[in-house]
Structure formats: structure tokens, C-alpha cells
Length: 162
Length: 162
DNA sequence: CACACTTAAGTTGTGCCCAATTTAATTGTG
DNA sequence: CACAATTAAATTGGGCACAACTTAAGTGTG
Image (cartoon, rainbow over all chains, first blue to last red; front, side, top):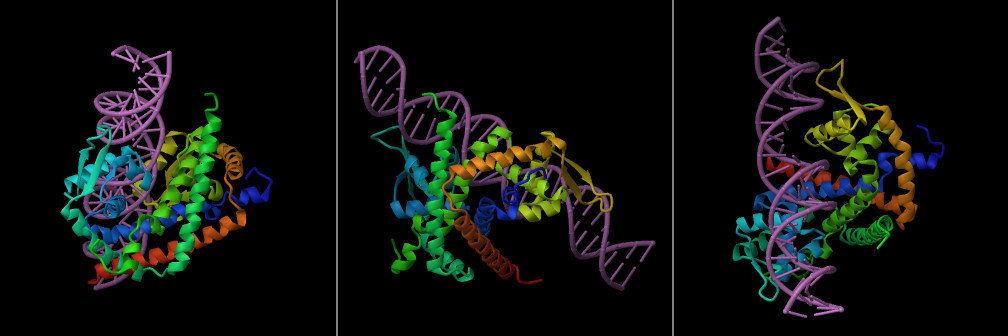
């Protein structure tokens, strides 16, 4: 294959890819959530938005994006769909007309207990020790941070002249 | 918030979500790869396809899908784009006209050393111990399996009548 | 005050992902 | 052999993710 270092070549194998394993696991989780979320008519990202709103009551699009790591290009149409579904409302903030506030409607709030019940069923179905899962989660958060830092360094190096 | 069990409510918090951490890490990895893959004009899924082709030389769309966990709905247009870019070729298999075989062109093969060099730069930029990374990968593979098993169980329960 | 700069959402375009459906080829069974 | 069932790709449609750009609102400095 035109390379001499066995270790480098080894690192090219798909099943050795941490990145690939990460994607596969994320998609597997997605698939599982999709099955149960279909009952309430939500997609996984929509579920994350509702989760954030149940926790915080009201959020600006910007804050929501920061929490979910999504930009307005993704959120704007997604929020529009949730608004059309009657689960949340949107209004420009009075003190700063640039920002848009989002909060759950009564129907949106009514969804929470159903989702909690659903998650209980899910947790039961997946064989995953809670403590172990939390350790894994912590390692993923740490990984995300170091990846973001690396991205920032690379981006900076690519556009170095101010 | 209308629920009495503190632990259940705790499990609703976004930052407690393994699933969310997984997504965020996958997207962070994606972002990092995007920066460097842009130089060679590949997206991350396209890169995975090329990786599989460098390793196996020739694959059917079905086999490719099994390895990458993608279906024809995703692969068909993606492969079409890679073909248009001159990186691979496609042809119906002679022994079974249903299946389509895919293999890298010379230009596609020529990309491999560039990618290897690129990955070396990446590895250097990300602060990640190799052994630790591999342990994490193994746990993710295991998680994926148990999630898939749970999905299969749920799907079966939902459409029980034969 | 004026004007450049910055910030927040939204829009557009490209690509990915999946579900559902379609088409064509192959296989299995009476 | 005939014909139902299965299989492999491709297509269609909805939604997510991001880059690049636009618009409008706020900020800061001369």
C-alpha cells in the first residue's frame, strides 16, 4: 500500500478508528431514540431542544445553540417546526431586538412526563451500568474539549495574518 | 417540574446525557477532520469510503454499507460524487447483476499518502494518549453493540405479529 | 453625532442520514 | 417451469449540520 511504517498503516484501518467508533455509537444511540421518540413525534435534536427548555423555561436562540452546540442555521428551521407543532413559542426580546426568545407551551410542558416514562423504558432496555456510563460520558466530554482545542489551533494556524 | 423522583429528574439534565456527550464528541471530531479534509476535497463520510477502498481494493455497495453502517440511500449519491471527482469507479458485478462493485482509481489511490501525512499532523495536534484512545474506542464499540441489541428488541416488540 | 464594527437570527446551498418505496435480479418452492 | 419471496441499488422526501452570506440591531470610538 505504498507505506513502510506498519504502525501508521495500522492506524488507517477503519476498525481502529476512534472517530469511526464514535460516529457509529452516536448513530446507534440515535437509532434507538428515534424508535421511541417517533411515538411523540420528535426527532432527536428536537428532543434535545425540549430538554433544554424544560430545564430552563426560556432561552434565547443563542443560548440554546451554545448548550446544544448548534448554530442558527440548524436551529432556526428546527425551532420553526417545533413552533408549528405547537410545542414552543418564539418572540424577539424587548431589551435587545436582535435576540429571539423561545419557551415551551403548555403542550410542550405536557410532553415531559411522557418522555420521562419513555426514557425509563429505554434505560431498562439498554444494558448499561450507570456509573460506567457516567465515566464514559466524562471521557467523551474531555475528548470533545481536546478536539475543540485542536480545531482552534489549526484554524488559527491557517488564517495567521490578522 | 412535576416529578417527584430526584434521580429521574436528574437524568433529564442535558449535561448528564451520555447520548448528548456522544453526539457532541462525534461532531467535534467531524469538525476537526473537516478542516484538514477540505484540503483534499473530501467530506468525512467520503473519507471513510476511501479508507475502506484502500484497505480492501474493491467492495460491493452492500459490503461497504455493512462496514460503514450506511445504507444505499446514503451511499448511492455519495459514491456518485466520488465517481464524479474521479476517485473511484463503479460497475455492476458480472456474477450478480443486482450488486454494484466500487474500486479506487489511480487518482483515488494517490490520495492515500496525502491522507496519512494529514492524519499524522492531526494526531500531533490532538492531545490523546494512544492506549487511552483505544480503550475508549473499545468501550464505544461495546456500547454500540448493546444499543443495537436494544433497538432490535424494541423493534421486535413493536411489530410482534408475523 | 457619525460611522465602522460587532452581534443575533435567518437564508441559501451542499451534503449526510434515514425511512419508505421502486425496479430489477436472483432464489426458493410447489 | 412458474411464480412468490427475497435481495441489491437507486430514488424520493424529510430533517439535521454546517459554511457562507444577508439583514437588522446594538456598541464603541473619534
